[in-house]
Length: 154
Image (cartoon, rainbow, N blue to C red):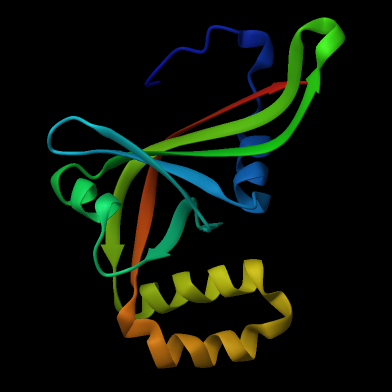
């Protein structure tokens, strides 16, 4: 385990953590630059086959970071509710730790298709056409998950 969770009573089961990864609307990808500067960016993504897939432009801040250090974390928050009278919040959150790798070919196409199916399930045919049209203008990365940590406060 990368870090021990202090509040063991809030530890979530692996199956529930994977369910949150599957259903989450967006996640926050965290990277570190070659100068040691942290960078977090929200992303649309798809989780399948015990990996996280996301697409991006051909260049940018996160890509430069991952070129020098491909170790990343990816956080998804599924539910929050502030409980003012108890000075606390109810929440469900998951952090996945792993390495991000660019993928190509059939795996790239499948990653893009999984993203289409997640966010636009009623428009898969149109999404497939878009992938064929502009797929070469995008990059797709796969986060090979090394560890998942889920916490919740019910």
